[in-house]
Amino acid sequence: MTGTAGNPASGTTAGIPDYDLTRSAKCPLDPAPAMRDRQQEGPLVRVRLWDGGTAWLVTGHAEHRAVLGDPRVSVEPRRGIPRLSALEAEAMDSLAEDGSDGIGFIMMDDPEHARLRRMVTSAFTVRRVAAMRPATQKIADDLIDAMLAGPKPADLVEAFALPLPSLVISGLLGVPYDDHEFFQANSRTIINRNSTSEQRREAQYRLGAYLDGLLGHKLARPGDDLLSGLAARVTAGELPRLEAVRMSVLMLFAGHETTANMITLGTLALLQHPDQAALLREGDDPKPVATAVEELLRYLTITHGGLRRVALEDIEIAGRTIRAGEGILAVNETANRDPSVFPDPDRLDLQRDARLHATFGHGVHHCLGQPLARMELQVAYPTLLRRVPTLALAAEVEQIPFKHDGFVYGAYELPVTW
Image (spheres, rainbow, N blue to C red):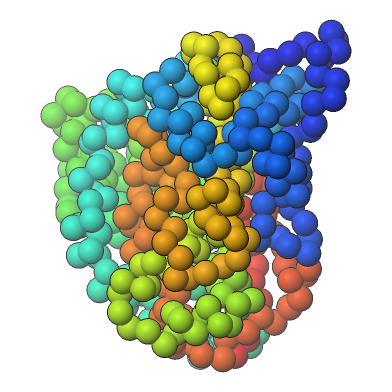
């Protein structure tokens, strides 16, 4: 299965618009103009993919939740979720051929997804994450101290946005931060949609071999970290060692790459909206800070390309029928800009109640690490704005290299000065 509907040779895709993710150079923090056009056409529309096949594009907020919460949809590549490029199709088909659905339980359906996910849920509870806040605050302050002591302009990605979540997830997992360049480089290869299947395999193999070695150390000398917890389950016969390694790879790269991009884009948005930045800089009440972070998460959806699913049965959504075997693209960024849920959705309003945003997904596959991400962002933004009150961009927005080539949107660099 390919997860596409329609036969290009039959002419059935005539008049169906392309699935175009190209963001505007003038408004790089907004959804792609083509995605906004599709949203105007309705909450569920068909789009043509790169290979001429089609998929259902979900643009509405209510429909987004309905699809992601429906047990009749699958996330497994082997069942035919949409592919967004020839290289990605090659990589997914290669994974399906060897019986693997890739990097851990996020690409699995229940009940196996639920069984594996439960094994690591305790590490991301609100209580445990709250206990990590003082250490995260110290990390943020230390990184800012180092940035202020260094040359100007500085790259905020390298100086702050990337090392902060990398240090936090390294500590949680029990991974030496000294190896951060290694795991960051391989993580970028895995999530780059232009990586070939061979490049993805090699990156996953390198990370897997690295974490397998660490897991071996934890089997012999367990500590108080997530890898040690997985090692204990391996010892108890509850989890194969290979699966423990895959889960570790997933949490390592997902735990730093996503939050790093959110810190980067959030800072850019705040610098573009000084009145909103002042709300975070001048207040010290944690509740308004939490509210502001939810709005930034809504406004700056970093999942790039949509959450891919395939229908296992016929499903009625928004008065239309998604047939069994047809691919689905549930686009977070358009759900987050749905005016029926978020009035004046293109306006950044840090006092808005944005708790219904779609950034962390919905249903059984909602983001496991969302309490950790929220805590890191609640620390990062106010600390940066208060410690560096004159922070400013050191380049025009058009000069910033944005990540148009990955499944996680962000910027490779963010030059700043003060």
